[in-house]
Amino acid sequence: MPPFLANAARQLPLALVWAAALWPVLLWLVHARDPVAAVRLAQGAASAWSAAWPWALGSAIATAALYPPAPAFVRRALHRSRQTLLLDQQALLLRLADLRQFETAARHLEVGRMLRQARKHEQAIPHLGRAVELDETMAGGWHQLGLALFALHQWPAAARCCERAEALDPGHAFGDALLVFGRCLFMVKDDRALATLEEHARRHGGGPRSWLWLAEARARAGDSSGAVAALRQAAQKPTVALSPEDGWFRALARVRLWGKGGRA
Amino acid sequence: MSRQASPIDACPATIVVAIACGTLAVLTRMFGPPEEFEELLLQHGLLSPALVADGDWWRLLAAAFLHGGAVHLVFNLMMLWSLGPALEQSLGSLRFTALYVASAVFGNVAVCLLYDPRQAVLGASGAIFGLMGAAVALNMRSGRHALALLDFEGPRRLRGTIVANLVIGFLLPFVSNTAHVGGLLAGFAVTWLWLRPGRLPSPGLRRWRLAVGALALVLLGWSGYPVTRADWLAGAVGRTADPGRVRQLTEAFMAAVGDGPRDRPRPRGR
Image (tube, rainbow over all chains, first blue to last red):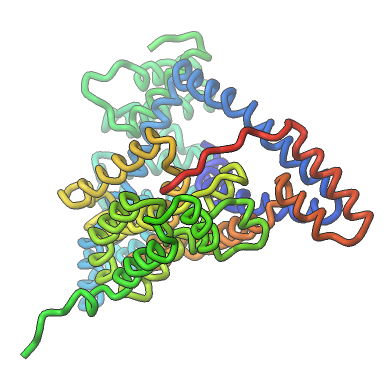
């Protein structure tokens, strides 16, 4: 999803509350000038709403039934909400209290990791930054910091962090640092992206996410057949249950294959 | 030597609310002739959206202390007594009072927004649903994580109670579920955003407080000034001296009643 859409989706609930709060204000303002116009406006909005919501509901159901990424997107969104809601605040508070007693890189890393897993990336970054400041050789710290920056679409900074993690500990986190490094390079249109992702595929194999990213890098480099092959790998039927994140990438790969006339 | 705290020391606000409900039942002569009872209910704060739009804002709160019969009163007092003391001890009497008032008022605001202007409602259950919403919010804030409340028997029972009461409300035509849901949401929001805002700093809290606070104020204002509703426009015509404005308001009234008057609604208790 493009960053501006992701940001807009995050702000949508708050925007809806403000819209609900401003609607009566608008009606009062219109009423002050022309009471009939205010009545017509309210009636028009009510009839538009009555006409629109069955169509919206029907479209949503049809999309969910016919377009594979829709259920995968819902499953991933639910999983992410659950991760946020399941943040163990008691454990986090204990770790924050520990940090006040005695500051170590490992403790900052643990707090940052917990916050990042709960998708509180902005709050995780100061802790992860401090962790790698205290211990520059901590590959885990650089990797977690890279992931938090990656989630906030700060590609160059994320690339630097993941590159550092990979340099300190080759194959760190089963190749995840290398994979995210390759993806960041792809996002900033760096020529090294394809080679990095190919190296990841060679050394670590992959799942739907890494194959899809590799397919995109190959397609950009003009290797259409290679891209389709990678998409097939990403879209193939899994032998074990996929995580919601991997399910999302597999669904995306299936749709891309339709466009290329291929099948999983 | 310490002595055990009496209920009056432990939960004075809950007791005051219960006494107020009982006193109003006596003042409105609940067991007297029905015509007199209805007349006294109207005098003491029976709520209808039209009366609130006519300037009787106080009914938004007063209606939450009136009851339509002994069963209604006893059932609400039982629910109040089962939830109130624990919540009051947890939040403190002042905060509990603020929660109760907010839930009662916004349960009734929901009625004003969604009901026919002539529909009458009364009862404490909007506020009591607010206490249930507050209990859910407290459990979500106090546990290891927001969903930890599902791991324990007490919160699970509370969830069952809320669902059962809402289902009963949907099944019985004389029960106002709108006020129940309004009170539930108000109690949850007030507790979640203001009374127990979490143990960790949340960057979005201030934005949400501002937005929900603005929405609450505007909805409260709309209950008193629903400028597109026919009953309010009819009253405004009578209150306005300027002939030009009277003509505008009359045209607006005609536009608002374009579909013709609706059937007289049946009264509802809560």
